[in-house]
Image 1 (cartoon, rainbow, N blue to C red):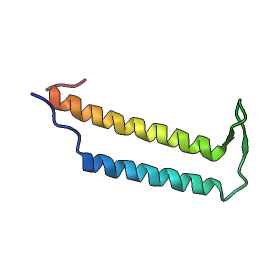
Image 2: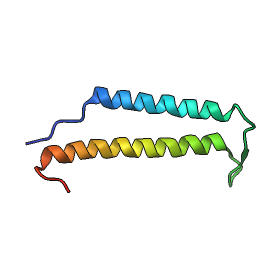
Image 3: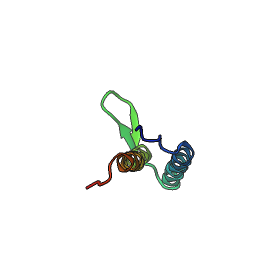
Length: 80
């Protein structure tokens, strides 16, 4: 029996919250002097870039784990 797909509405809502929080984080970094520099190759990068990237990586990892955990729990009676 195939496990049901994760609830798309709740996933979409969680993603929207994550994007809004990332935007707020970025906006807060512009309230003070912004530190920036150039990466190898000359592309600019700032503290805001790094903060938002780290935040989204962690949040999306958590959301992905929750989705996988729900799916595993639906397919197995016991999950370690």
